[in-house]
Image (tube, rainbow, N blue to C red; front, side, top):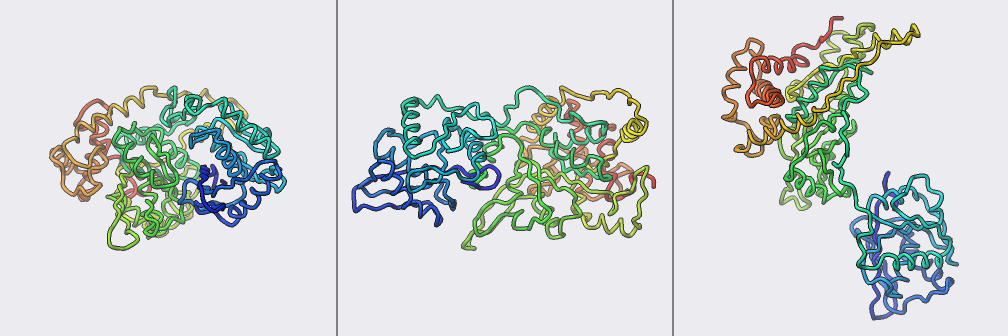
Length: 516
């Protein structure tokens, strides 16, 4: 059934029972599907088949999703024929059948055929039957596509298929490849020129699940780098994967992701879409980003209410009310915020070959849209500066070959991140709700854990940290812990503490990260 990009897989169940003859279709069908009863009766009779004399009940699975259109005509007719002939005693036939029936049994094509084939491949079907199955525009090496033009030819194809795959022969179905089975290692920064400081900051943020803010002029690569954060995320453990399975079992996007999920929050997102819908009791974007990343592209473009809601869900669980209003459904929302923004309204602030036309009050109002409370929640704030722009411009303007690009790959980066994540699990195993260093100030933890009391005192005594909030100091401490974990230690040294302080220099105090 057509639904969005990938379609919705619908199962057809047919049951024949004694009683007054009738034909019922259940499972939230629309008017077009209810009318298919008359088309199917005529198509069966005109194709030489006998319509069952028993009472017929057809169930469309899943039953809680509204179904519409004429794509299910052929599948319902074939299910009735198989049920009448008792050719296949099992309930599950791994074949997708799509087509609209004419009164004479002719099969007419429907919209969304390519999406239907993609859904068939994704869900383990080994057969695909459609009038134009031979004219599809995607590769289907693991699935047999059969083009049929009448109900009789479609029935013959199905019965032949059932002889090839008897009820006990389920091993012939293709197995879905796990999402995290990526094969050979691939560098997440493949194709990126320069931006070495940003790479370093992203590695630290991914390892410790620290909130990250990337800001810089338009075209510098902020969004490009933010989209690569998911590839840096450490491997989820069994508990984290089980939590995602429970969450995604209640939404239409099941099966759940096997690696850290990443959700892009649209600029017109409402508070309800972030927290969840009270009427349907469905989780929102914050919960769907659990154990993963919530990406906020161009922070100042969000409404004040949305940013305030983001601030709330970044600190704890998402709570939405039930339909009766007497109880609340509680969903977890351990998320990592990754935000991007320009340095000023015009975007020219700090660029070497551009002039910023914004006044100082306009720049401050621009940053004030995000607000100090939310900015303070970004443990790492770093500018994105296109380091290689001058070299590339020189090559374009002169026509001369630029210097050979140095490949900056680190084949041990992912191993280093996974090892540091495992070190964090051991370090925080005695503290509930904390798995990564970036979770110390999240999820209801208001005190200072005993493990880092000494680091907090050391950071508080640093001249660069005078006047900072407790949250800011704890952010510096946890970032320093993550840097030490990447270096194979549990506690940071002075150099690692100074590096952690440098990541909180921008945004709140130092807006001008380059001279104008």
